Image (cartoon, rainbow, N blue to C red; front, side):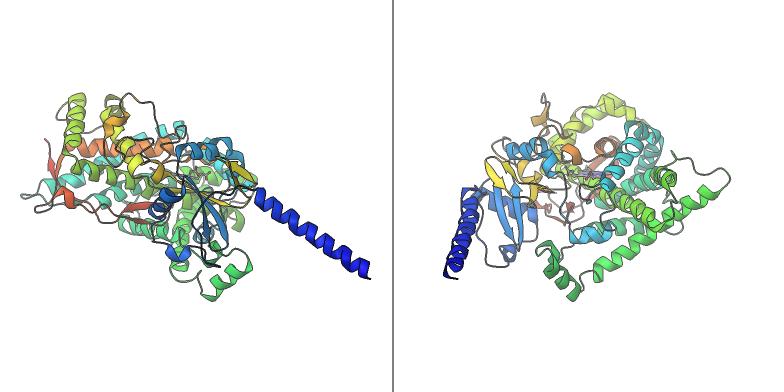
Length: 504
Ligand code: HEM
């Protein structure tokens, strides 16, 4: 009996020392010490990228953060980002299960928030091969030109008043992008739609985007404990529940309209828009009206609708904000554009973009300073090392794109808006240059880089060609509020009000 007791002790000691030695040999990233149970959650300031940035200045570019019971690491340098997104892309190409996103993505049946599963692979393939490719981009060219023309006419109406009134650039940008994406991706013409008008769509996008990043207890206390707390405090109800219902009604309306025409004598042309394409695709595998297929289509619709509209509008808004604060850059851009395109044009076409260079530098600089998605969430699927630090499996990894874009080790005078820094530089935003990652990189790179940058450049081209811009009476550039707000995508908090004057 005594021998048995003795042997059990030896065994226990051996086990403890194995665990202890293993932990001791691990080189975990440095980071702030947290309180028991909450970690450093109580210090959260509301804007993750700014908070992470402040902490990383003290703790370094690979920093461990105790967020409740969820291990997390924040990446804030180009080198570390390259190691995660390129060298360790296979191990980190899944997403953490986020509470708000789980509800609005129909339990991760989408692309953006889905874990690295077969459903993700299928949806991603459909979206890149069939829906967001270069050929499709060309198909909707005239539609984009038409909608930009509507935007110009709308701004012109304000400009032609005897004393021109200020227009809300936030609203103008959100509206034009909503029109383009709803028509090309969802087959919904908001000019004629009787159920969902432009105002309703803009409201849905803004509120829906915020709701997607809605935190639950389970984000920080995974498993039964967090789920129970979410249930107890009814985290799924309230804003999230209301948004889910409103968005679901919208997607259902879009799908119903398509299904109706699928039953019709000719059926819908699968290349008519993205929804038509998806319905044809799931139809090949079974009934497109089944609950599971519907959830999958709605999940993808959510990505296009919530992930596609505000991210694009955000960049247009920030570009105009920076230009009004930097009149020299505004003048240079307008002179280049007007000289290249000629005076007194009635309408612009996308081919005009090939004739201008400086505008594209402005867009790159805006991506650097104001990325629409400032932190990209990933999760380690297996243990990895980054910059010599051990990162255990299941650790959340946040790439702080916002902080990397203003790292003084990479960028000279990083806080300065200076489009010329990209002159004679091959640094691009398509995921191969890890100092500029507005669209991410690797397997999860945004599949709409081409479409998004095209709409942004063409939108700005129209705004800068047809109008001269000034601040409303009594407002000075130095006082423009540069604050941002959001949960996953972040937009300019205060609307940008500018007075347009028609150039000719
Ligand atoms: C300026 C506009 C946009 C920005 C800055 C942006 C940014 C991003 C970022 C940072 C990611 C995550 C990449 C990663 O994890 O490495 C992403 C993913 C995604 N984006 Fe965009 N995006 C924009 C526009 C769009 C548009 C217009 C659409 C569709 C209409 C779209 C659809 C998606 C989808 C489906 C994903 C998920 C990809 C995946 O997880 O596999 N995005 N985007």
